[in-house]
Length: 339
Length: 201
Image 1: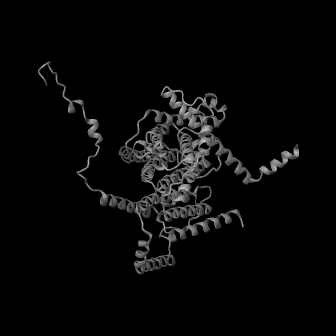
Image 2 (image 1 turned 90 degrees about the vertical axis):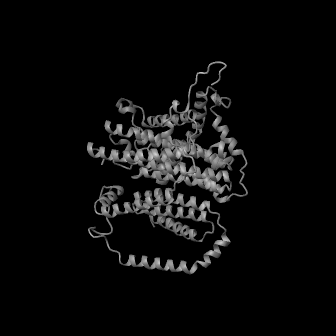
Image 3 (image 1 turned 120 degrees about the horizontal axis):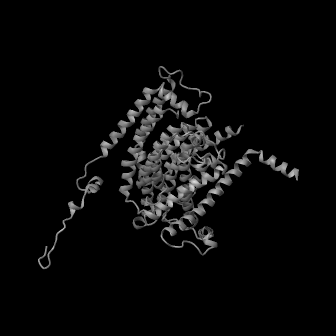
């Protein structure tokens, strides 16, 4: 018995194996979360609309995500004759890989992070800014006008909201004085800082809706104008990859909001007594709360018009965040703290 | 060979291959995507050098923003390869001339490179216990504050210039004015008339 334990201890000391195992744990965790997020979305929205939602597959419809997955797996993949085949297949894969890669820098609990990068915030921002390519390439490679228009729309939207998101992150970094996500969570936040960051939290929440192409900013797939948008030509597993990537990005952005604004794994409202509950629980609970906001917004708000969306991004959020960066920098200088 | 060496050779090889691909591929969209791959590998080399901050900036600024705009423009073009080849052959002498001048200029700069006056040396060592983002910030806002500000000013001028060139007043299209819409009151648009029966309004 001891020999077996010793053998595994020896194997565990081999670092590439540890990396692979932890990466798999995070990846499978994210994929399970995605599966049950789709279930939660349907259940929450049906409750808001006085319906039952999925209820026939398994108890309370709990096996519905599995059934959906099997259905998508089993379908035939159709590649349009006009399509650029390589890019047509690469686009969903790339998008999916990016949606998972960003999780490497997210701290789930104290010390529970795959890569404790010094530039963690920038890493997540860089990875999420790459997602535009998946969308544009999918639209272009389909060789269809609707898909192309959907891709262009989506790309313009994602690029626009990235600008204000970057500035919001600058505010947070100014206050915490670090680009490392673990240090951002642990940095002390006096009352004036929380007051300053609150408007940024509101803008950030709206920006992540636009960044992940979710309602009320889901114009790329505005079915009444351009049918399915950039993914109109995709079916079966390729479509499933887009779907998984969208939901993984939703969870990622919620986790980012939790890390930047809501104190990550720390107990809420700084109540020390609640620290007996493991940090991962608080992290998941806060992330879930923001995901609920995503679903709530989808169930209750009508879709924006495209020019309204652009106006909000460039003429409202950008000037506001720009001014707020200056205000935050001044406040940090006046009250001390930060750098 | 250490793992870092191996990583460097892989990154450098892919970087060079994709950079060559940018030049030799026929399809402009593929060229842009190969350029993205080139930037990615360059960012990887930066990380190996310990310049994580620069690597992330390279990806955010070039891959995340600049190349997306490139892709936008290139995707809108419908390029006919045969026509493009003929045009390319016609422009060859001029192209060679421009390339030669650029090469000569770059060589001249590289051979006569000198640090800015006031700077200790062209290469700054990373101080102990300071992240590279912080070190870079200190250098940029102290030793190089004037060149840094001038660079910002040049970018601002380019931005204003681009907007001034493309902005034009279009009297023939209808735009939404949110201020007008929210300032509108029922009294501006409606009139309530008491109609007595059988007399009309």
